[in-house]
Length: 388
Image (cartoon, rainbow, N blue to C red; front, side, top):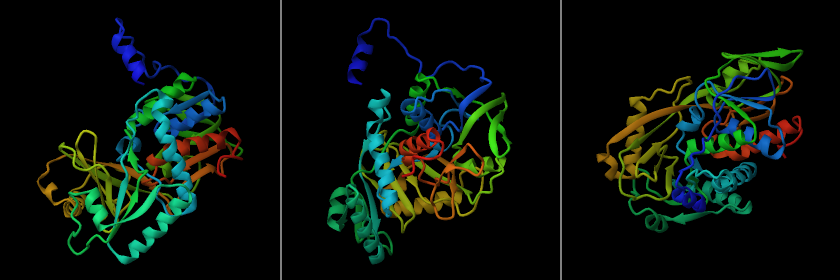
């Protein structure tokens, strides 16, 4: 990256390379059609082309690339989960994130900052000890720290918020952030270089299923035949599954976040509290991001609400009281596809040659690389590999 930048700066012609080819007409047929041009869909296309030599692929996006949940999340990357399966899966994703800028020759602004999760009760401390041991067992860098260590790590944090004093913390050294739209564009750029076609403003209107198998996709720009199709549409997963005639347990809930005016750097780690239903991080531009849990009722809408703003900010101010004087700049929402057990749905569907990448809820962005690689293995193997 530095050598390319120096070469660019010293060139008298300042060569400009477009990230994506100019838009073109849809072909009559493709080996693989990927519905959804967010991080997961683009990652799947990239890994299919890179590792499996499958390049006759169309990625269909009804809006613009990464304009759905990929652009609306708060960019947190971590692997400090409780189950062995979850830890191994997300730890591999973290490792992949760390090398993406070099792999893409495109800066995704990955920053390893660590994540601190606060424990306010004895029960939470016991649970965090278990999580720390599971993480260590599978190679993760996670440990318990006490109040004094928390005070040294985050001097501006209030350790006695209201009736919930902080007893200890789960310190996840591998936690970090990345620029979410840069991740999508990096995958898109490299996939396009390998021959993948990316079609924006192309909405899927109907799935053509014959004899129990998908054979074509009807869009607002015409019908295309396909050997197989992959659904990666995040919050709209249940609606797309209906088009395939598949009953889904997924419900969609808005997930809101907000950001303040910029400040000088004061917070390097990501700080969260499950008891206060709030997390706080400071971006590289100095803005402070607040996020929390999903809205309490299903809704296919990305509106923001005053109720959530008031409750979330009340808890954030308990953690960092001086932020009471901060001015908010933006509030937004994404829509999360939640399954009853909070586990994603990956693999072949009841419709032959129709693959599902759904049910990621609030964990989709951090799984982008490993999910794309896994779905690509599933597609390339005809549904027989990828989920070992």
